[in-house]
Amino acid sequence: MPIITISRQMGSLGDEIAESLARKLDWELITRSHLIDRFFAEFADASQRHMLNESAKFYLTEVEGKGTYKDLLEQSLYDLAGIQSAILVGFGSQVIFADDARAIHVRVIAPERTRLNRIRKQFHVTEEEARSILSVADKKHKRFVSTVFGADLTDPAHYHITLNTGMLSEDECVTSLVALQQEHELRFRMRSENEESDTLDHMTELSVFRNPSEAEFARILDMYQIEWKYEPKTFPVEWDAEGNITLAFSPDFYLPKFDTYLELTTMSQRYVTEKNRKLKKVRELYPGINIRIVYKKDFISLIERFKSFGN
Amino acid sequence: MSDPSIKQIIYSQETLQKKAAELGQRISEDYRDKELVLIAVLKGSMYFFADLTREIDIPIGVDMISIGNIPDTTSRTGIVRITKDLDLDITGKHVLVIEDIIRTGLTTAYLIQSLEARKPIDVKVCTLLYNPDRLLINVPIAYYGFEVSRSWLVGYGMDIDEKWRNLPYIGELDHP
Image (cartoon, rainbow over all chains, first blue to last red; front, side):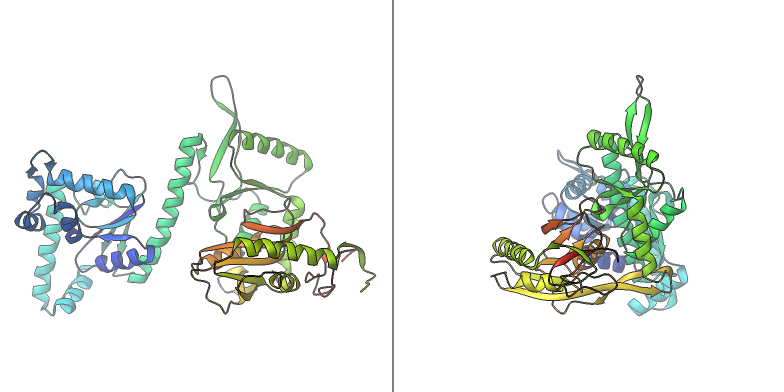
């Protein structure tokens, strides 16, 4: 299932963003305190749970016949991610799920001055005390990930995205993450389909329209607020004896919400016939796929309608 | 009513009422004991909606929605927006959108996206007419009256430049 991991600096609003995101997506929020009570109650008594809360090294302790607490933590999280979507805050989850194609890893930071001001307000402490609180928290977070997983949590390579709440509001961060999650999930779905059907992935490429008709059609879809992807994949339809692709079909648009591919044909009948032939092959080779052709007269009619709206 | 611009009557008043009765009966059976809201897409579906809802023998909510294009400062094209919104709350209810005709499906797709954001149980579509050859988007058409391929159809709510809506039948124009 899709998951989002959130690593945050203290005073960065990372916890608030995680809570708000969990509400918006209707996913379970799992923090360290939830996690210890939920996953370790069976293997650890109260004093061991206290140690798990306080000491990074304790995660490397062996539990009789079950590996270390770290192993148990990882297995419990894999099991959880196998059955439900969740937002995981802290505890090195960005390292545990580093190879999970469906996961999104987020780092939330803020400039030191902003964090100090927030901590001062939150705990009613002096600037010096706030500085000390932040320093201890930063060290503990860093030590946990480095001790348990041998990784540096501040390394940007661990994350898909880093959000700076000195520049972005909590709402802006949450809205961006919801949009990113939807896009990432779509990307994951299409990549999985590509692997299953041997189609070719183009979704890392930018939309550069080949002709003005495609750009015009994209504007029509935008007008109706229908999400589209431009040429997101190629369907091979003929191969030579060595298995090299000799004929392929790349529909112009994909509408994810309606699982529909659209191909524009605004040129001469000769090309339309060729396209129809390719399309017939695609339908034979990839049953269940939903591809429609936008013929010239339909396109003109849409443009006319477009113009009738005053544009 | 006779109109010299009408080349031929495609569906008579009697045929249309029979079809509304048939669809009304099917909808009544499919949604019995369910909370259903029927939404007319103005203005084209108003006569079909009036006939259809009166053939449904289960309790239903009825509402109307209208969409149009408004200018938008961030785009050259403007955007399609709801110009008359629903009065009823559709959250947790079954929704059936009633259309006069679906051609490309773009308008219906926009409408479905907008209605689904309000968290109904489901949104399906009942259209009097649809043209399968021109349909571009896979919209959930659960009920339809007739498949059509002709272009210049008017009457029974459908218009060209706001004319011929009030014909009691559906006719084909000689030329718009």
